[in-house]
Image (spheres, each protein chain N blue to C red):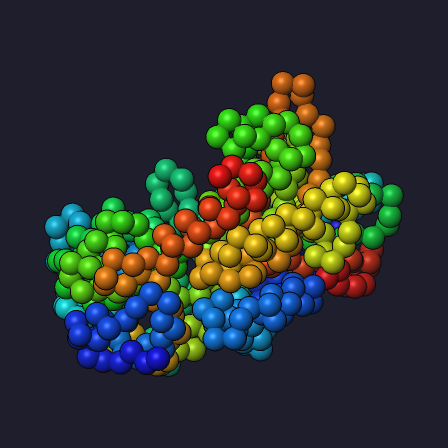
Length: 190
Length: 293
């Protein structure tokens, strides 16, 4: 299914765990340093209201005066678990894209503020870079350095799976519990 | 010193970072065939398959985390190791400038990135002497996501009800797969060392990644356990990227080291689907005689 701009609360609330989506619109990258920056009380120089945040440290180069994304796979999201709920609330995010899933605090924030966690395929840096059609701008490049800066990029048909929705469901939690139960049975520890 | 070494090592790094070896591609395709039509697992595997071709065609890194740089060198008596290391370091620095490697080496106290991938512990070189005249060099690039889900167990283990026997080893391995879920960018490949001390155990577990996926362990007991662990892990339903599905592991390679009577370690290294390993044999004249994978 497609998810396109504008990312309204209604569209986000309609997404359910397991949905395979192709996202077209705008992503803002933000990883460790950006989360800490916001947690420390700083304001971003750009509004991310109703936007999607991408846990990604892209490889971006300048070719003929324009920024070009060379690799743009997701980074592990769980490192932002201490900050994510607060960042969703402060920035009024509608989506977070990353890999590996996040914890209960984030899941609660997704429910409360109408936001969704989209899981991209880890390691697929080239397929995902191909989905980035244009770099619109970059923020905090001087302060945080290229991989940690906020890159505003236009994406078309970016593939992801909804693994945590705005209704309190987490595929990560479900699969962990089911696989644990199966392993216990296999090992004879009911 | 061997001629053209730096140029050849640069090509080794480029090929390792951008192209998966045939045995890995075959295993990925096998995993893809097992996933159900319309499932999230198949969706992930299709993207992975596409990414493998795209990286190769564009000669760009498969994954932006180009990982820890691990060289395994087998050479004749008299190989000048210091000179080899110097050439290898230059090749790594050059490969970083050319974008085959990401700037990936960070000072652990200051947080400063060296920008060259050179620094204490990077790259890592392992040397072994052989009676042959040729020099063979193998390279593994191992990303941080999968390195973070590696695990080391000390047996007996009360929580897992694991004793100091092969059943105990099996329990440790399957627990590591359970804890990793999709976080190591599965479907993964395990390298397992039974025994050794904490350091040699982990080092030996990583050396298992040098074995082709299709080989059969020379020890029949371990050969059987390798096969069973993959089948059992794939019954857990964790699947590609942890999305659920039938392919959680693409392989498991095990080996043993002797241990102290007091210790019984099981060291498990996890390799992501982007299993970057390559190698070549160089003639004394500095020509690439053959690629190893």
